[in-house]
Length: 346
Image 1 (tube, rainbow, N blue to C red):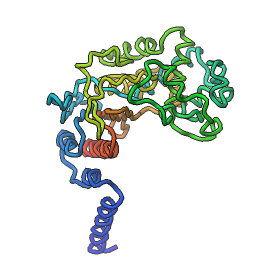
Image 2: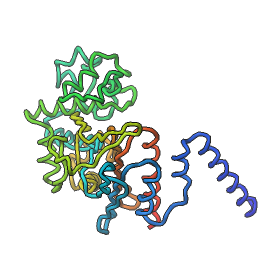
Image 3: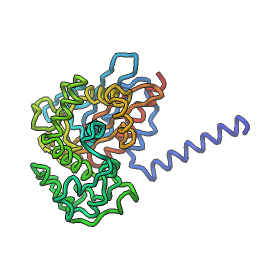
Image 4: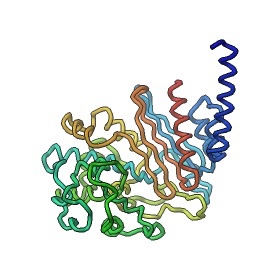
C-alpha cells in the first residue's frame, strides 16, 4: 500500500473506531478510551477522576526500581479527605489468590487432595449441592464445578449482608447445577466459600489464621487483614456506588475469597512473590500453577480492584477505585490498561 493510501486508510479506520465508540460504548468510557495518552502515570491517575470515579490508588513495582505510589480524588468525599495511596481497601475477589496459595501448600503437605470430592470433605452438603459426589477440589479451585454463584440469587441481601459463612452459603444451596462437573467454566464465589470451609475443617482452625502464618507473616505484610472486623475503619477508603448516596465502607462481606482488606503495596508485594516463586516451594508452585491464575480482579459494592503482573516489563500494577456501579468498571479497566501502556513506554 502506498504511503498516501496508507495514511488515508489509517484516518478512515480511526474515524470508524470513534463512530463505533460513540454508538456502542457509553460516551464517558469512550472519552476515556480515545483521549491522547499522557506521558506519566500520575497524569493518567489524576485524569481518572474526570470519569465519575470518586478516588483511585495505583501501586507500581517495576523490578530494579523503588515502588511508586499514585492517587487522585477522594478517600472520603463527604469530608473532602484526599485519596491516600497507603490507605486500606476492600480487595474483594483478589482474596481468592491467597486461598488458592494456601490450598496449594496444604496439598503439598498431603493434608488436602485435589481429587477428593466435595461430598468427601463436607458430607453434610451432599444432598444440598447437586453433583457433590463428583465435584472435586480441583474443579472448585478452577471454577469448573457447576455450583451456582450464591451472589446471583435474586434474593441475595446486599443491603443486609449475612454475618457468617453459613448465612451466605444458603443462597447457593438446593439449586440446579449450572453444568455437569468439569464440562464447562463459570466463575462462582460459592466455590471459594466452600474451599474456605474445607480448609477450616481440615486444619481444625480458621483458614484466615493459616494464611496469616504461612503467607502474610512470611512476606512481612503488616497491612493485610482477613476480615473487616480486624480493621480500624478510619484507615479504610470509603466506598461509593453510583446512584446511591451513602458510604459503603461498613458493609461487611465475610465470605472466604472476598473478605480481605489490604493496602495496594501489600497486595503488590504478595503478587510479585506469587509470580517470582519466592512465596511457594517448587512443589507448591507446580501445584498452584495447575490449579489457579496468578492475577485477579475484585468487585464489591463501592470497591473495584485489579492486580496483575506483566512479565515482559517485570512489573506489578495494582489499581484500587472506590466507585462501583453504572459504567465504572468499564472505565476502571480502560484507565488501568492506559497506565500499563504508559509503563511499557518507559
